[in-house]
Length: 296
Ligand code: ADP
Ligand code: MG
Figure 1 (tube, rainbow, N blue to C red):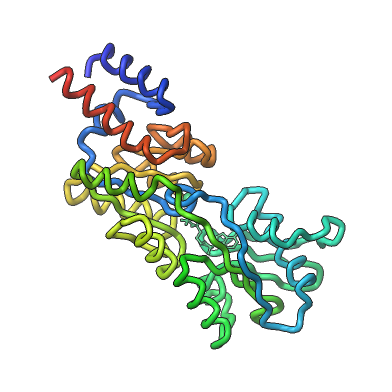
Figure 2: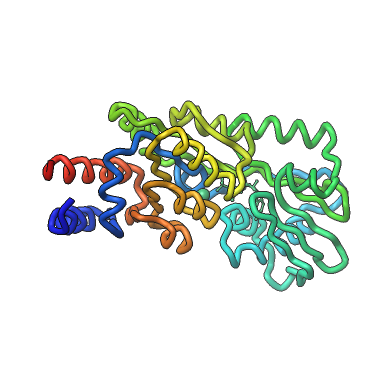
């Protein structure tokens, strides 16, 4: 496109809340045949809430929540939505929350730290597996029942044993299903990638009408999926909101960040969807198609 055409399209995009950072993304967007969506915060609202809490141990619910909160409070500095959900639910008295030592974030798995004298692990199945924590049938049943309902389970182990769990729900955005089916009508395939587990991912994919998804994917794994598709000659757009999406946003031909997402994602993207509305994925591709059609 000519510099003038790019300028006009960029201005038009901006007025609709679609911030296009350069001519390159605008040129490529009309060729997109595959859109890869992140799940949490992209297809879903991204404000997960705890809908149930269970104990698998002798801790009181209050003590259990305080310990989980202590570990997640450290993480909530980096603002993982699941950490926020646990902290909000527990409503622990800030004076009660003990100090955490040796705090560690395990990307795509959870957090660990020493809370007072206790070793606390908060995260998913993978975190428990790598820490050699046995789940047992009661825990497996809880996980199975909740994942079927598209909920994510947050498992908590204290001093090497399963102590309890939270089930977290994060509803899909109201426009998600409509956008996926509209993209299909434009000849565009939608794929979902997520760090979350397979069962929860399957339930969300089904809810929004996505046929292909990859679960339990690391941030680098998300980028690798994009590169695989590109290797098959596809022009690929990636839509994401998290730090964990930034390698994929960079790898994609057109990276689109959710405006409400993290700064890291916004910086990594070519296009920012200021309104955080998925309809604007269509707006962006449409704008590119019209701009390119006009100059040809
Ligand atoms: P997504 O790709 O869906 O945005 P992430 O890669 O950030 O997800 O995380 C993948 C999974 O790791 C989450 O679904 C959750 O099970 C677990 N997890 C990550 N961070 C935390 C945390 N702070 N507390 C508990 N669980 C976490
Ligand atoms: Mg996300």
